[in-house]
Structures are given as C-alpha cells and as structure tokens.
Length: 223
View (tube, rainbow, N blue to C red):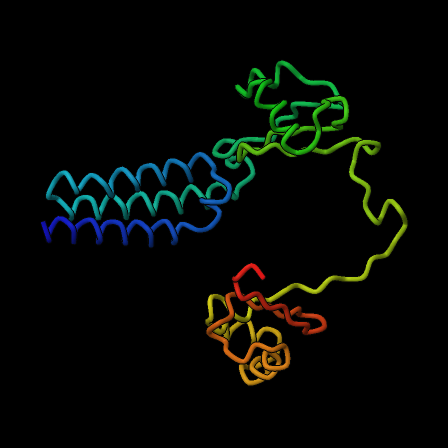
C-alpha cells in the first residue's frame, strides 16, 4: 500500500510539473494540440497505477512533451497555423447570423445566443460582429449604438488608476512585490502601525497602489 501511495504521489507530481512546463497558454486557451497533450498526459500518468512499467510511461510522457513543443513551434508558421489551430469564423455580420458558418463550425444557435446573453447582448441585432476564435471563444463587437458608454464617448479624460500590489497575503509579507514598488518591510510595518494594524500576522490581505502608495488593509473578519 505504501508503494502504491508513493507511485500516486510521484506520478501526480511529475504530471503537474510537465503541464506547468508546457505553459500557461495550454491552460488558458486550449488549441487542438494543447488539449491532446493534456489528455495524453493524464491518461499515461494514471496508467502505471494499473501496471508496473513506470519506465515506459516516463518515456511516453517525455515524448508527448516534446511533440507538444514541436507542434507549438510549427504553429508559428502561418500556413501551418491554419492547419493546426484553424482560422476565426464570423458567425454574425452586421446583426445578421450566418447559418452556413454556424453549421460548418458545428456551433449551435442555442450556444451562440447563450453566449451573447452572457455578455449582455440578448438581441443579435445589436451585434456588429460575432467571431468564433480558434480557441473556441466568441469575440463580440457590438454596434456603436449598443456599445456600453465609456469616458471616451463622453469626451472625458479620467485620471489613471494605480494598480493595487498585494504586499501581505494571509499574514505573509510579499517581499518581491514590495521591491516592485521600491519599498521594504520596514516601510510597510510603519504604514501598518499608522493605520492601526501593528500585527502583520493578523492581516489577511494588504495592498499598496503603485502610483500614490496608498494602503488598503483587510483583516478577513468582514468588518
């Protein structure tokens, strides 16, 4: 039983690192070779739990990893990119749905309408373009009269908002983030004391804006 548990831990750990090595893109936007690689890795990682040949499985995982890298490199060439990943497909143009494109891409009208509603556009007439991307996502370009009003439409120039940088997460100081804004732990300690929070361990989350260095503190108590 101990040997079996050890095998599970080993294979799980190896699979995590291999998928991590493949890259974030394989998780954020799955292409055909991304999905194939992940399915193959998962299948081969579980297979040794039913057999004893770990060496062959290790070799197979390595081969899949190399194949994924090769396919990713080939996809950088335009003509191969179209073959391996595909091209965007226009499903709606100027408020009109294109039935033949829906059929050729095997994307149902029900799914299209649901996606439009989820993005705040229940009426297809409000859509200038709806494009099915190679990753399976729908890019929606609304007509000007249906687009949300932005400061640009009102000819306003809003002030730039600083990005909140997390400096404490669950009581632990994020040293790299402090370096990013040019501050150190001593500075943070003083600012927290000024804000009435002398104990860092009691702070669930704290962030500092990168523009004016204003501090936000949340103790996680809901108060």
